Length: 184
Image (tube, rainbow, N blue to C red; front, side, top):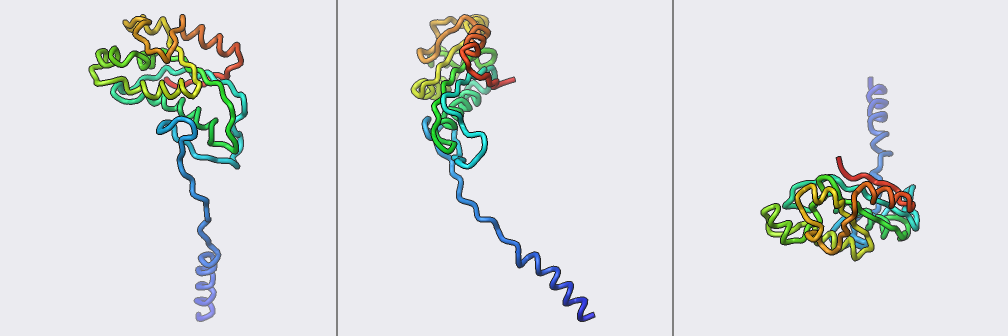
């Protein structure tokens, strides 16, 4: 019996003696190009690193709570930050965003937006401004805009009114932009 207990305790204690807590380097969020929006973690050893000179067209159709930042437009800020500093090295990227569907009205001038949604300001305006400063082109579907009762003159200056989302998406893809859908 004594031998059995000795063997049992040896079997039970052996795995604990070899178990070690893995040591990981700390991962912290950063904002390499667009401050305070689109946080990323730098992963220099990960597979599928950002490829320099990539071209992306983001099809943004999802709306949200009009009193809050549209989650899709913030995700575009994350795309910018991924290419700017989440990989092994910064990679140049050309990003265009096409707004339509429920995301159409996120680009209204602040006073027009406030009146339309009965709020103090357009919570998307600052993000759109930062995206433009980072080189992102933004287009809004003119058909969706008018269909939702707004006028092209009511769109803020950082966003261009396109004939339609269809023509924008087709033209940008024909120019080599990879299609990324945000919404549904």
